[in-house]
Image 1 (cartoon, one colour):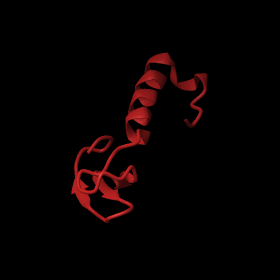
Image 2 (cartoon, one colour; image 1 turned 180 degrees about the horizontal axis):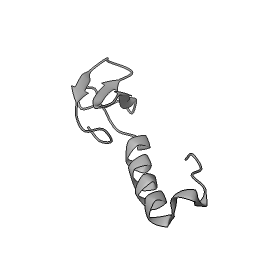
Image 3 (cartoon, helix red, strand yellow; image 1 turned 90 degrees about the vertical axis):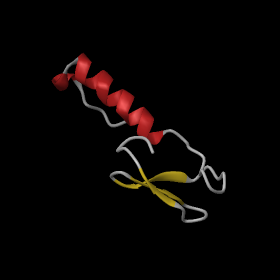
Image 4 (cartoon, one colour; image 1 turned 30 degrees about the horizontal axis):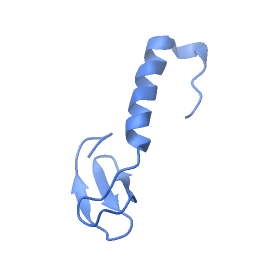
Length: 61
């Protein structure tokens, strides 16, 4: 996780950490089941193995 330091306050750092954990969580592809399903752009999720693309939220598909 990128270090925010004490500049931003505890509440902001906790919210950022929760969003960062959601974004970096390992996910399975809905089509092939591979664990290479990740975000390619903001709101676009793509499987690295089969190339399946789906749109979703910014931090979760």
